[in-house]
Amino acid sequence: MSVPSDLPKMQYRFLGNSGLQVSCISIGGWLTYGGHVANENTFACMKAAWDVGINFFDCAEGYAGGESEKVMGEAIKKYGWKRNDYVISTKINWGAANGDNPVNNGGLSRKHLVEGTKASLERLGLDYVDLLYAHRPDRHTPMEEIVRGFNYLIDTGKTFYWGTSEWNADEIERAHHVAAKLHLIAPIMEQPQYNLLVRERCEKEYSLLYKEYNLALTPFSPLKSGILTGKYNDGIPSDSRFGHKSDDHYIKSMQAKFGTDDWESELKKVAALKPIADKLETSQGRLAMAWVLKNPHVASAITGASRPEQVYDSVKAIDLLPKLTEEVMREIDEVLGNKPEAFTMRFS
Image (cartoon, rainbow, N blue to C red; front, top):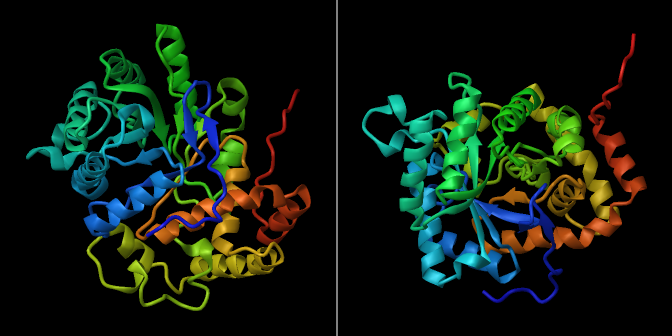
């Protein structure tokens, strides 16, 4: 498939307090690559992303039991991309598929950080990853051990930068405190869920971290598993992955939400956004993606794709950014009614 001629030029943003530049839109392998999407489709999507200037690809040891890393590695090899031209990340915490005994194949102990990263690199077929995330916090492992573990991986050339995923602000602050005390490298990026329907953590809880550390966001689920595209407004489409029986834990959990009050409330909000999208002469999916990209702390929004057309559609959101004026952003806030209140300083 040829690349559409009307796509905007890719934007690149610095990753927090680093000199590394990443495409503002990136491709992730969660729920798709190595799992629910055929390998050839994965290759086509990654090639489409590459052709439009996307240089950042994200996976994790826990995605499809490590298969996501394998397929991404195969795609890189298939197309012969030069190592210095792309940025790849993986995440460590859930690596039960790496061994026969799950006891030490998970968590953020120094043992699993080192062994899990080694196994990930073997699956990817790479000597190092650019970014390495702590895939959720591990409250059983001392923070000093976690910080030292990631620094060891940086010092031994297994990664260049480390960050967190779905850590709360206190945990990120503690990591910075320990790193400063030990004169070590602190996490520079966080991978949270962030979208029009999930805002509290990124817009309120992390606010002091942006000021103090210039924390970079590389959020996942900017379209909230497709809900924000509006395709579920009139029911579950037959071609949706949620429309069929599955043993996948996430898909089953999503299916359990169908028809609930929370589900109907979300759909009502999404439907209310359609007039705004129509006024801007765009789709609801592009509006949702552009809204995430409008946040100045977002270095790159990680999205999934099972077809090249979905990659191209996400990239078209870049053209929408200048149209998201203060007036439009206020209108969106009024429709959703979920803008977090800012922190207020209180003095006694």
